[in-house]
Length: 132
Image: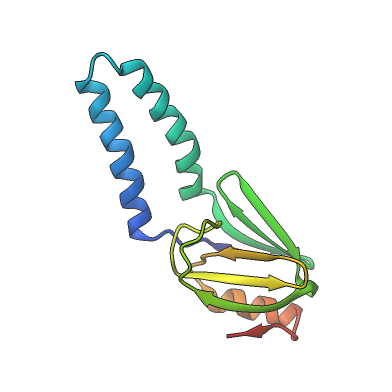
């Protein structure tokens, strides 16, 4: 089961503003064109995949969070609890409306569009998960 990741409007705004500012400067500042051109390519290379390659995949007995070039996975049987957070720490989420998936040995953060579908699918596979 694949659940689409959530991208907040502020994340879109940051990406568009950053790219737009660099493109504008590229055409205005003749002396810094090479630096700005490289920066535009570099920024696009890292930011755009986070917008379009953002999902949670549940297969067999494993949950995998995919966010741009980053991947994190955990066995569903290892999950102890899932809770909501607005923690702004760096994580695999493009929204502050996040979930923390806590296992016995690790934690993952993600933001999904359909939280209830995620909760339902995970508790179906592991009824011992505590969701709060």
